[in-house]
Amino acid sequence: MLATVSSQSPKNGQKSTDFTNFFMKNMDGVSLLLALETFKKRLINDRLEVQREEGYLSNEVFSFGSPASENELSKLPNKTPNEMIEFLKSHNGAEIFIHPEYGGGIIFFSVDEILEYIDIWECPENCIPVGVGRDGEWIICEVDRTGGNRIWVGESISFEDEYERLPMGFADWFDYLLVAQGAHFWDWFR
Image (cartoon, rainbow, N blue to C red; front, side, top):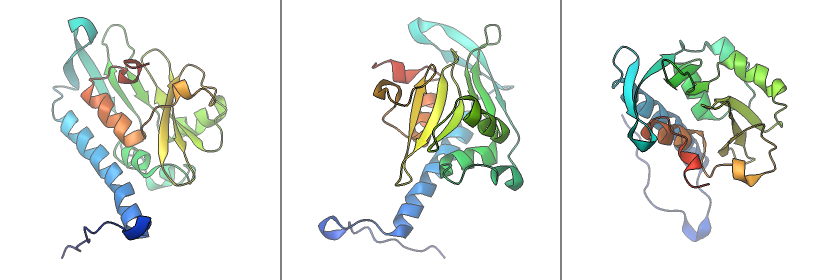
């Protein structure tokens, strides 16, 4: 039996309940996986023809790691966003939008790589490496005190330059990346 949730909005600026917060956080992970699985259905032999900037067409390659085990996931920092954990439960690392001749694309780290790059990139305590972009850009997820998160993308991120901090969390960034067919959509407005 499904539980019903009241559609009433909080009165007088009252904060949402813990249940609502939990539900919304988990919806990010669910919607991310739905977007990913829908996208993967379009692949033919792990390839997809994508249109790049200026009308260039490319038949790009996709590779998804097997699911991370519960033991592997337990090694992640406690602050790791739920949507990142859900992605790793489905694929412990991935390479997407890879040009078959020139490489590039977006590489999502496995659990072991996340742990390795925390030290290599000297990430602050509230930041978790996600992967690398087409041109070697660092992709990092910053977790705030409320449990929300933001994506940072840049070369050798300083964590001080707001230019590198995107106005979206991991789930939205990932969804937009799929819709933009791997293009660095965040650079379109910089």
